[in-house]
Image 1 (cartoon, rainbow, N blue to C red):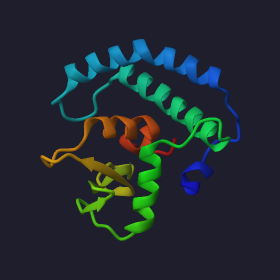
Image 2: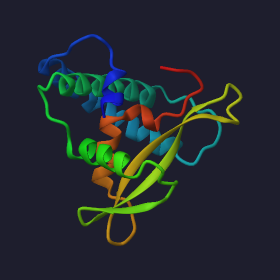
Image 3: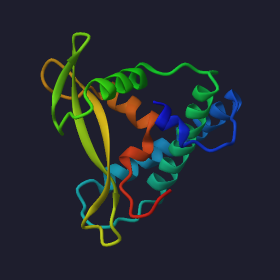
Image 4: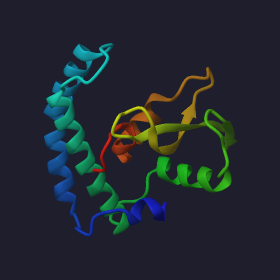
Length: 161
């Protein structure tokens, strides 16, 4: 967990900035969802300005949250604590490996984080844990928390942010 928090900017944030970002996200999420629905299923590079703006604000919100957690103004979430614990317990877990922890099943997933300039080779992978429900599907609330805490993990890019 310290490794994730150490990559933060040196700027310190306050709770009011988190509230401002949350208020900025509300209309952007609606536009981004409509845009995503309209482009879902298309292949290739699609220009999606509303989705891109929404993701930029999500990244800013994640920076603010991480900074407030680093300052111990906000506590670490259950997702962050369990992910850190599973990372330390199962360092060599393969993609799609399922482990049990405190009665729940978690699946290790590797997602492409950074592509080569051509977009054909994955240069960097990210490792995350998904909570599995009893029917084998991923828990959607857990995934939404992952996306809120680490939105950059769900952006595939060819350059560093």
